[in-house]
Length: 55
Image (cartoon, rainbow, N blue to C red; front, side, top):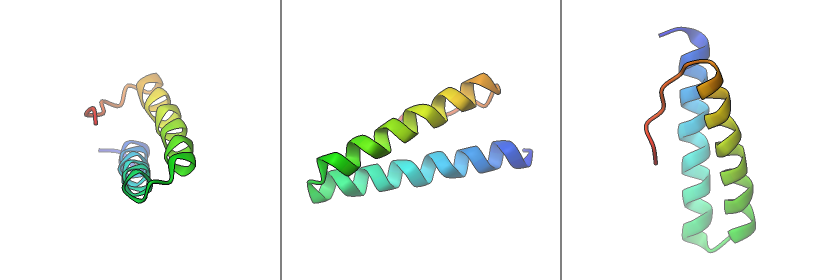
């Protein structure tokens, strides 16, 4: 795994965690912001052929 792939997968995992934490705390605004960032990361990963498991 190259550095780009490892980095983007780590960012996706971190962003998922932040989104999920915001949801647990009832912070819908932050959850939406994190979901938007997650969508962008998934798009970037797809553009570069990085396979990401859905969650």
